[in-house]
Image 1 (cartoon, one colour):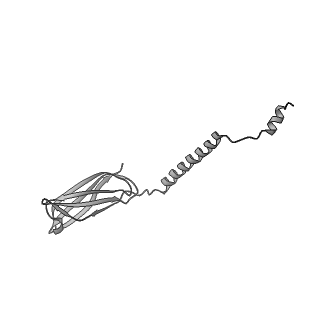
Image 2 (cartoon, helix red, strand yellow):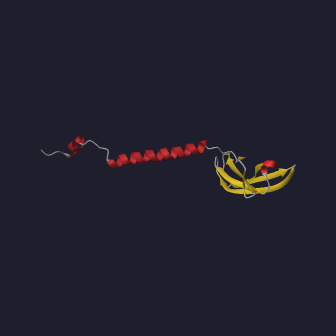
Image 3 (tube, helix red, strand yellow):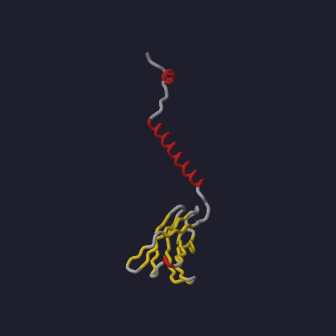
Length: 136
């Protein structure tokens, strides 16, 4: 018995092909990634750079005094050319001045460095601060 085209179509059940399943999964993955990127961008802090400078224990090596420090960008935006100054004062007068430049400091990033002095910072007043920065 020969079937007509109409009867064949009635009995045919459409199936989901492997290509359609793959397309659906790939579309969901791309949509999730785009959604996460947009959410991250919207939740990001847009405040200007702000800095926290801390020093750790002074060490002496061959008559030189090393003052390790960390600088943290606590603001929301990235800063470039961050200039960190260390001023060593004795009896209210500046005895030594040192500077470091950090090329790039993104939000929340911590960089480490050290200042080297010829005089003992433990016997005077040591002031660490960020003097300037640029926006990229």
